Length: 182
Image 1 (tube, rainbow, N blue to C red):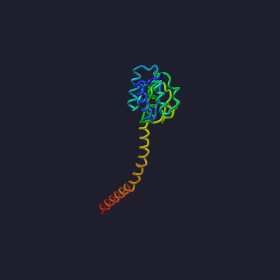
Image 2: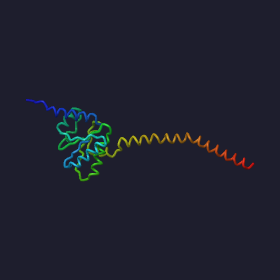
Image 3: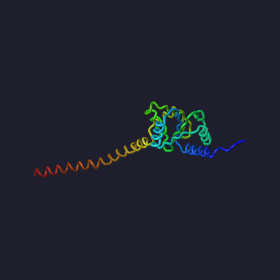
């Protein structure tokens, strides 16, 4: 006799599926051996970066992923698993985790694998992703690249006017000198 899944489990799968569907990136971690203080610090860092970080049940995560047509993460859904997701910045989850691992060397946080635009990537790809500039840094670089030529262009446009002012000032000085000599 087959029984219906409990309402809480159905809701948990639905919430996780919605979170993964919105996410530009997701990182699966093994948090085994982390103490409460370290986990609290990690969650705070995640929140500050706009990243969701949730401990998940592997079976429910498998169901949510399969519902979305994502395969390939089943081997990584063993043991304690938490998923970091970001809907706004694909680099943020990987960067926060990498920074946390560097800062808290004695904390045994492990990257298992991840998703980037719903494609499965390994732990090495997540580490490479963490080395990329954040979305804000990239936007600042783009803005700087756009502003630099505009600033140069404005300077070039103002040069003839500036040179005209210098020439008029020199003419005025010459006229003053010639008037003083007379």
